[in-house]
Image (cartoon, rainbow, N blue to C red):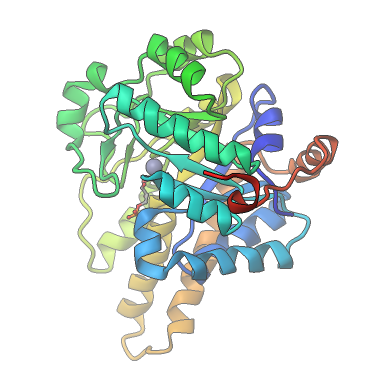
Length: 340
Ligand code: G3H
Ligand code: 13P
Ligand code: ZN
């Protein structure tokens, strides 16, 4: 069932679970995620990044997600724009039926971030769409923004973490529905040079200055060693890859206000590892179904495991009830509701 993330976060905030926000880039990834969510009766957020939009054209991806909604009506699904960079893009996505958007102005100076975020909130809320914004800086690769190496990031980490007082001011002045915070994670497969450790003390402080505000953790892939080993065994070269340990993800969602957990890298890893394995062990194989299929199966198993780490397995029914309790307010179209 298509919905906004509001009923999900209403329950997740102090319900001891988090919602997986998985990046979709093609059909096999989309099917892998949704099959796992259906099997585990879990809500999910399916999100489309800038890279995905460039690669696949977001209309194709949107229709894949709509197919998932049609095929699995029992699964609560939110369609989300990941790292949206302009208000125009936000408007386009609203008109195209997204139920949630992220406006990422974190690379702008603070006042500019407020300005673009407040504008995105204005147009989104007018259409009933919810908004995530970002404050602070993540390491690694972030869309077009040149990322820092794990070493540089770790060395200067205090400078990049989200400031709790600023978060309070930001939330008040923009009216956002959720906030992506920098707490030591980064995008990609090389998140930590030294010890993998999230800044939970910082999360606690942000929760105090912004009570009730759902927090979002980007860069939450765990980079499972079994997949890194498979990639490396079959001709890949991913030395020193390191992700966020699963116990820290579990803690973030069970003990703190982290309601949304973004995962992309791990899906790519599962798909790539399995494709490499097929190519290496069956060199005559040339039917894409016979290498993408095993990749999809690996994604299903990986996502199932994550839904237990996130403690969202079994929460589909209560989320649907909460959505109905809210009156199932499906977003309308920006152009019909707003005059700007
Ligand atoms: O924001 C980071 C995501 O992993 C998306 O990356 O733009 O290469 O698809 P992408
Ligand atoms: P990972 O690179 O850790 O999967 O993070 C993805 C993400 O944050 C997408 O917005
Ligand atoms: Zn991200």
